[in-house]
Length: 75
Image (cartoon, rainbow, N blue to C red; front, side, top):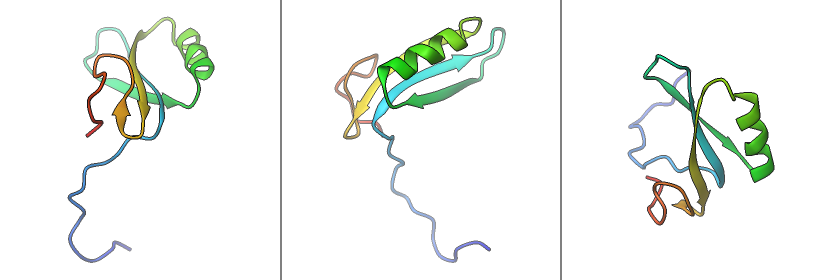
């Protein structure tokens, strides 16, 4: 059963952790994956070594710590 009322207009916030984008070759769609530790992120990189793997950066308190969007808000 759906909630009644107006849907929230607040932007979604990202959890703290390391984010990466994985896409299959010859497609434009990608999947964003989050891991809590850098070691877990490295394991995902080896697991998806045959796909296009792109490290997006680390998020802490809704700000990008490193990566392409360093210093920007996550919204």
